[in-house]
Length: 491
Image: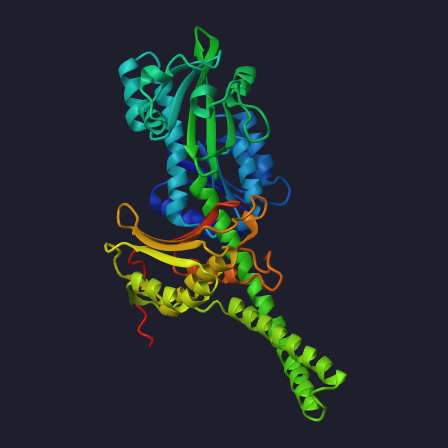
């Protein structure tokens, strides 16, 4: 049953749609509506690949995964999960799931996951068939496999390593072979340990079975890099002598799922904010009007007049907050037209320069002439960039500097816009919260500016990231796709 897939999901409609889609693609599809039914099928039929939902009544996806791996460790299992179940999805990888795909399911993403599963099955078959054929082995790990591959002995020393990983490490084969794996890939002095760095080799040596772990590393910018690492036992004359370790960078998948979860959260908060703002706006108008009318009949020098002035000012401040809430909640679809982003940047600098100069802050620009025209909503992109420049101005001490730059990403697929300052920076413990609505460290801020900016960039198909060092400044980077989508004819 070479191309057979068992599909397990308690949703009848989804199961039926995927059954049709996978059958049309050329797979033989078996279906089950729950974990118990799936186990019955697996007892009677040899199925190489199982696709299962994580959340199901009775035997859930994680428990089904455990049962499958206990009975047949070589069965590849792909998990289906909602955006809110990211932790469960990562947990499933630690229980040797092949991959996970989020709902709503993208056919191309699912097909890629299935292909990976069958590739792993093929890999195991090839290794068994050609384990003594060095020429075929070299071809396999260096050309057919694009993942990072190491052959590691039971003493943690590298017996072999493929070209893909050597290029990433910037090493020659002779510089890696013979050294401890943790020295080469982790720059450690002892084997990996801890919740985020469990050693897959250690577990494989202990159980004599394949092991899968998710490692969290830090890159040169101190950002999290997620790796899915699989270790397969390596035998000689019936004794285990080490493991074949495959590692895949899943950072992009994790970040994409985080971004989608963030967008869902922002949309929910936006709808709530819109309702609250509209309900508050009318009584605020009544309070403001009444206070101003009473002031007209009172001596400006009286104590009551001053109290009414306080009421008026605070009401105006509340209305400003309500206005920000409505801006955040509006989430207007961009009316995209072709624009030169450099021209938009020039306009934003012109509009904010006076405020910066008032604090003796210089705004500089470094704009690439190679930047192509982009499909943008000019007003929304101006709002996003002005938010970033004004935030940079607020965070920078007199005599400081702000630089706005543009560049073309290698391959001409993206354009990047950066806003850098020499300000006080952002503390490590709050940097992950700055795009959340209502989060602010300023006494008079609403905490909506960066949330609005994040939403605008996301609606343009881009992403925004931040790098910061306390006391050394902050850099926000917007990445926008080149010519993705269609021009909007609205004026």
